Amino acid sequence: MPAAPRRTPLYDRHVAAGARLVDFAGWEMPVQYAGIREEHLAVRERAGIFDVSHMGEIETRGPEAEALLQRLLSNDVERLAVGGAQYSVLCNDDGGVLDDLFTYRLAPDHYLTVTNAANHVKDLAWFRRHAEGRDVTVDDALERWAMLAIQGPLARECVQAFADAPLPERFTVATRSLAGHTALVCGTGYTGEDGVEVLCSPDAAGAVWDEALRRGVEPAGLGARDTLRLEVCYHLYGNDLMESRGPIEAGLGWCCKEETGFIGSGAVRAVREAGPAERLMPFKLTGPGIARQGNPVVGGGEVTSGTLSPSLGVGIGMAYLPAARAVVGEAIEIDVRGRPREAVLAERPLYRRPTA
Amino acid sequence: MADASYPTDLLYHPEHDWARIDGDHATLGITWFAQDALGEVVFFDPPEVGATTAAGESYAEVESVKAVSDVIAPLSGEIVEVNAELSDSPEAINEDPYGAGWLVRIRLSDVSETASLLDAASYESSL
Image (cartoon, rainbow over all chains, first blue to last red; front, top):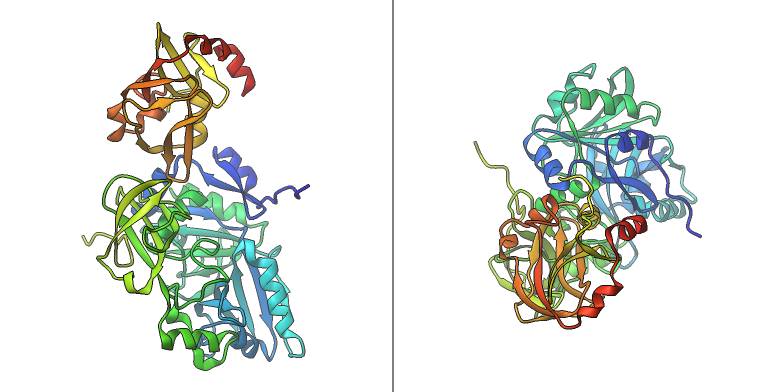
């Protein structure tokens, strides 16, 4: 019998707000409140708050913390300053992607890495296995942190109103008091909008949530989080990233610094030098229909994420295509459950904020 | 979105579809429960006029932002009309599932099949 799904500290608030709850990676999470489209547009136009407490945290501490992470993470961890944030992938020996991660450097010898819920246990085991024999501790910090994302053009201003000091800039992290509770405030997000992500104790999450809502921030669920990220072509592990494909194929070569010698760097370098056999490309449908994960591209290729774009009003997505066809402007046909649907390969991001 | 309702003049299939019988014709759609479970409908691709439906089998799909759902035919027949308005306003399926949100009209191939469908009270108690 499967274990009962876990609940975040905000579960009662989700129920009170009328959320539709679904099982997501073993957690009972809100997929929507008012409706995906409405929540999506609230984040694009105003501000929304997401409970992402299902995401995992790994804290790495000690004199060899930097050396361990430099070995594990694809980016150049030596270039991550205290108070900085860095995106990277975690590769296996063959250069396949085990997870994609944000790492924050909290102190010279102290890092916090945020994992995808479905990968947390796997990542933790990988970190620990490679920490053996090093002067470093790897802690499972999932129980220690709740996580909230407040995103949208008005998000910073709303959070600033109950913070004790200016919020950290984009891609930086700082400890602040929010609604009287100590929190790590990170200038990061997964929506393509400005905003912050807040890591706080599970006991403090309710106060931060309530303050944000009081200031007009609207609750947004995982459904809107998915449409928002796909419009700006951010990857979702399990859809667009997987162990059987590498970061170069996924268009994540920019966060891979092979010269650091990270695990899998040899394979990544070989793919970069030879050129990948396939590439992940954004697409837009040019007619009716919505392509979905798993739909084949006629003539070769596969959709890994697909939805209706609430901002653009058309079907959008990302697909792995043979490299020869992976060219912006190329017309493709997607087999949507037996019906051919016309699409065109597009530049990333698919959605860009209209310039005023 | 309208409140939950299950009109008593309709017959229901346990897969959350309704039929409004009119002699040897029927109008088909999805129930309030089905549209609520699906969330905002953003796309309905109507089947072709002249296509057939088979009781208990899928004859169309409705899509929300998140998911695709098969629409199950409560009765067998031939599609004689489709609701073309839904191409431009699929949200009618949420707003008025038994009225403007109707999906297709069929000519029944076996009127006796209606005996196997549920009345509103039986359907509602199955939810």
